[in-house]
Length: 399
Image (cartoon, helix red, strand yellow):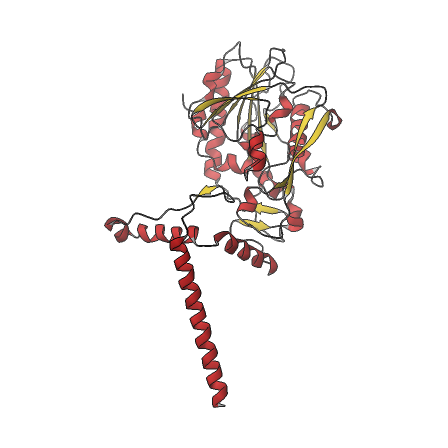
């Protein structure tokens, strides 16, 4: 009996010493190993060692910064994060606080509803459309607010996962914009709002949303483009009119970055090119404070990087100008988020020039770009989650 007690005591002592040794080794490695500036996987800067001040110590902010620093800079952090997510999935958890673990490898960002901000953004949009029409009374305008995967691919969500009712929010936006005509100078006087939810739900069994990213795929963007064309009264090109090229078969997107797991397969990223068009577009954009000109709509340097989606239109930039090379007298201004990036290439046969504005970086009302003899069409294109939470749309209503 006594021997058994001594053996247990010895076992506990060895375990405690081992645990303390691991903590001590981890501390030594954290001191020796240089801090990382950014997390490539999460595409964000990591917390640096905080500057300790008396004020920060007294108000508690120094301790919070140190906790963030310790969490970000712990040795083997990526492995620990992946291990935790693997355990969450293995034990049947529905989410990790940021992402729902869906069926068939789908990851869904946990979206938040800001009804007050949505109400404001709808009003900002109405103000913008009215100001744009003041600048050009004959301007053709449309608003496309895209649903995200959690609405269209709801059958892939974990059972009973609470999600935002995007259908109701889209209906609210459509009703609020009712009465604004798409084309006041044409027999087509339909609603300015383009609801692509039914068209996307009809194709939900196809690969129209990435499993590891919050964007729709290029195929999903095509079906939205097709619905947009049809609602505006024009004939969209058939899928058979495009060459489909695989850009990458190793794409891990933004949602995966919040739920890294060894069991998740990468996405396939594709581009669609018109078969009868050589795609001789030129693209000029403001990148990191400098103007840059690219041949075509794609930036190949991103294929080998974590942020592969920036292959389309070279990522998020304040202002982009695309010259398509065709001559038909039509030019479009697109106010957008990143859902537009794989949508815009479908427009290269529709317009001479495509102007693209991202209000997260462009802090001037883009209505000032509209002149009667210049821009003929205007499209506002956002996904509903971004549109509902974006606080930059206030610039649409400021002169």
